[in-house]
Image: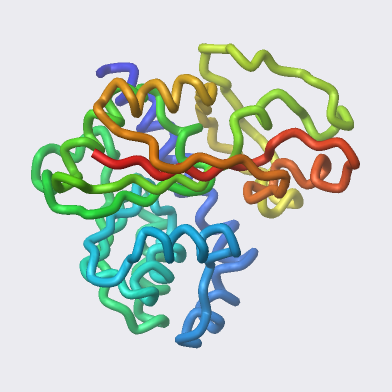
Length: 261
């Protein structure tokens, strides 16, 4: 647990620095856009799968929700209780401002997901995980054990995430494979250009963890989940694969998954 605490503490500081960059890059504008009750963050994949899941009246938690912009869309799509968890104090503050602008009732909790405890056990029909969550998780076994506790019997997990194969490529290499898909060691970065605003440098260090698709699927199965839906796509939702999206021959760049207990 000491390593988890070390990584979480460093990454919390990193994300708090990122928040101000993103505030300027897109959140100030989003505050105006999100006031429109027809505004949604859902793309065609999410619209289709949330319709399949049938959100109406369901209690939903978004895990590592950033500023909760997607959770606001979930609430507007008919969910009942909506709770977002995130480690960054500053992104939670952004989320509070966005929910006020959107005029929706959602609950935002600033916490390291590994420190959540038992207060929210057996309270959710659906857990929502989207872009970039897995890369900040050191320990998938503990993570999926926690998700299992959060869900009501018969509850579901919906994952719409960047494909782990993107970790192989570096944009400045033109698509050349630079990293090992089976790497188990954390990636360490500091003084890196922000992924949304390359003109800004994030000085704070961070740790990023690669998890193969088999590790994600295997962890779900090990913790008693049944995989009801899985698909892979050639479009990029992360901002990391834009240089690949325009190529004629493309790797999978994101995937969707629905699992139930």
